Length: 421
Image (cartoon, rainbow, N blue to C red; front, side, top):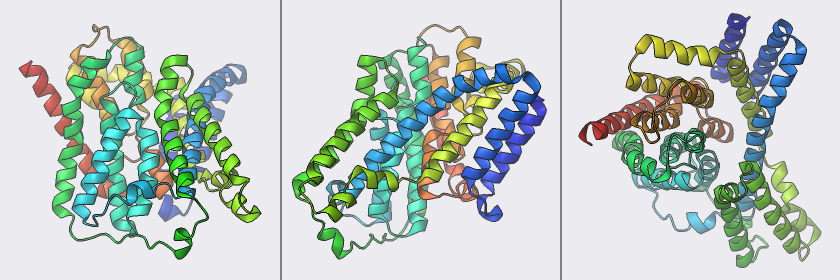
């Protein structure tokens, strides 16, 4: 049964990778693969047992989906009110190299404060305001994925796996930030430098239609929506720290405040403009196929975790490699294929190193940044894939090798740090 489910997952994975040649939306492939995997599991293990497991996994998955929906609604509302002009009007360069560095570094530091998923949603939306041509925009979106995962790895709130290790008592705040900042920065700077050598010329800025300049908006409305939306995103880790509630509660809290504000200012407009700038319109603008893809791929991974495949994979690594550094490096690379969360969860049970041990720091780095190697290896990559419609094969040819070089460079620097200290 387990072998059949794994084969179904691999076939579904292949269908997702070959989305364009097959002319089948990746969301459809992900959902179908998810249903088949869980159905096979139910037929072999009994519906009652599997139903209980499915509902447990679904609660975790839905919390991520709700967070994603809330963040997308906030970003769409900011975009609808043309709030990103506050940033784009301050970026005057059209030089590809300079723009690449600005976007990448902004993503890196923003993801350390927010998280890699939210940061990717914001930055990919921002790229649409800065770059008109699809090819250079795709390359920058690829660097956004690398930068978001690298930036999220060195803080307890930037990446879910780092958060797991922090909450689990394996890491504390200041040591992880001190130990992982330079390796994480190297993970970004090495591929960024390589890409800079090939990036030449200028980008074409999207032409702003006359209607954009004539938007029936007062500057105070645009600024308020931007800062209220951004504050809602930044407030999520604070909300979680104080209330200990899931992050989606914090994002929905911020969304509700933004919704109330847009409803309030909407009453002074004409009926057509009121609908145009309503939260309902922002919801309609969300790409729901991306949400369904995210749902399908997460539940597929949950199925593999539930049948024990990921635990067996972690044990096999431990018994075969027998070197903790190589094991962690392998976990990072595996996290580009399957979800890093169950892999890290398995490692937390298998190993009993003291708090802030080099093993846990290295695991946080590898699990956080290894997902960049493939587009569906991280939440940031999945979000970018959906929002920008990035083809799996295109990413594999153009970005994966850069992400792998950056991953290995950061890992090498971390191991060198450990040897020196």
